[in-house]
Image (cartoon, rainbow, N blue to C red; front, side, top):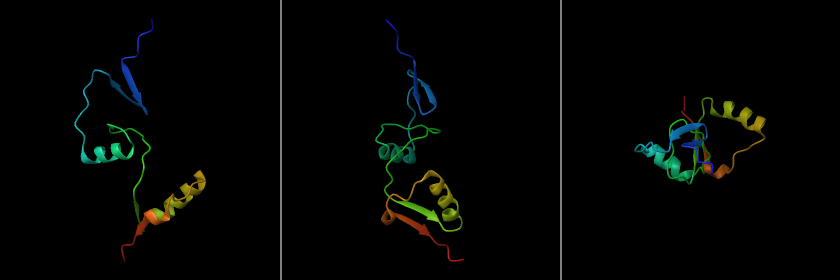
Length: 88
């Protein structure tokens, strides 16, 4: 009978199964909840549900638009996305 691996692999982060989970920061708890997971670790790449997104006007749109175009993607819901202007 083949034994299970003693390692958990989650998006490139390796942790021995016997290693205890560390306490999470508020950011980790919020991201874990949005990703429908019990725990997240620094360095993981995850996909999560975004409630609302904000972007600064001094470069965000200029940088984001080409990336979205290259991926063939668009803003998922314009009503839940805002660009913040600084006024200077």
